[in-house]
Length: 296
Image 1: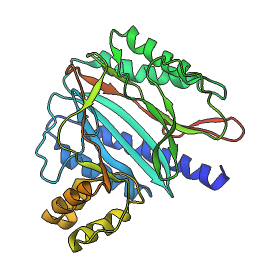
Image 2 (image 1 turned 120 degrees about the vertical axis):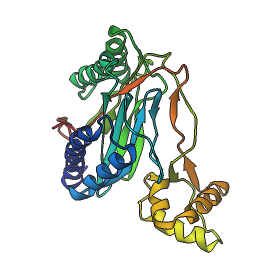
Image 3 (image 1 turned 180 degrees about the vertical axis):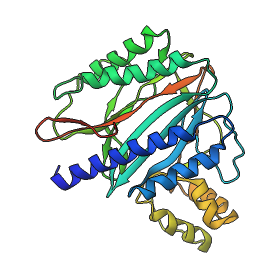
């Protein structure tokens, strides 16, 4: 990794950390989920970054991939709220998340996810095995009386690529792959009151181009041209709704039928357990120095 790219990763991380702090201030009872989402995305641009993916505000048993639509009427009241956001600078990505308990009932669950992240960060170094990170997360979450979500994980961060290798497990999966110099990745513990498994459920509002190809419909071509401006990163249905109105629904349906885009439905805990999330991005440079880029 050259110095310019390294600095872009660090800058993206720093912006995402600042935006996360701003976002936390908006997660309050009585606030609109849609308005909070849009203000957070606006702040990303104001600070000199671009969204690496749409801001996601997932509540209660929804672990991830919930993104507000154009007419979303959700009001924040007594939910456990996972705020997950990503920023990119020239394709270099910072990815971070935090959970706010508005119910007052799940403070220990939030602590479990956050403490699991903190403990995992302590052992990050060149040579650390992925299974060791998973075991640390698992043991920490279990110590609070909860379960880690086993089929969600941390992930590598590439240029214009939000999910690359390695996969950083939230339990001891036996993977002896070691962290190496020049790695960028996110550690992302999820703790739940449930069994620790999520499944896809509900309407997809987040998409990504997977197999680009020409299309005949003028409407779909127009929408696809806009999607190209997102640099191959995930995008929100709402972004297209705001610009194209009902045309976006037709275009997304056609793009899905042609296999051009991939859908990301909400990920819901299968036993309806409440979920808390925590996340930071890490860079190990060519000298083996560990930089937590999404930590203020």
